[in-house]
Image (cartoon, rainbow, N blue to C red; front, side, top):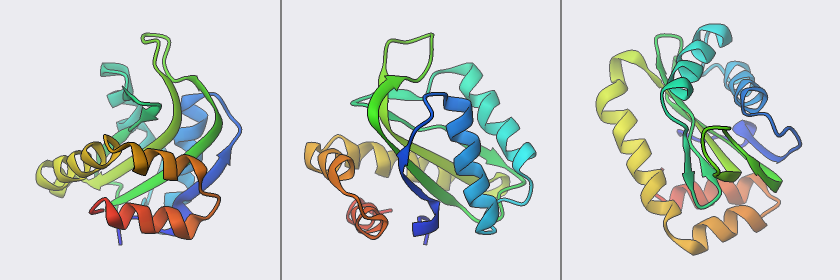
Length: 148
């Protein structure tokens, strides 16, 4: 399964995107989805430098394609308060989805995951449920309903 309860942080307190990304990446390392956190973070942060991954609706989707990703994953974090994700944009974020995919599977899988997340999150009810829930199990169920 691409999402796992141990990849979910329901009350992130940091308002710093790099800290949040690193925190989620370390969860992926603990679960065996990433073999080298520094190598994976390099890919994700390089992508962040190109364009902000804040997409509106209070959502950011940082992502990385890397040979350090052993198994595709989505890690999820939720902040109780919206905060500025990137100084280059005025987008505020509450819901963060970190995507990791192995380099060799990057093209098709990477685009499929992004499309499913984006399509699902355009639905107000999914976003609202993600904001309201206090259960990692419910987050996993919502991801399933979104086709992830």
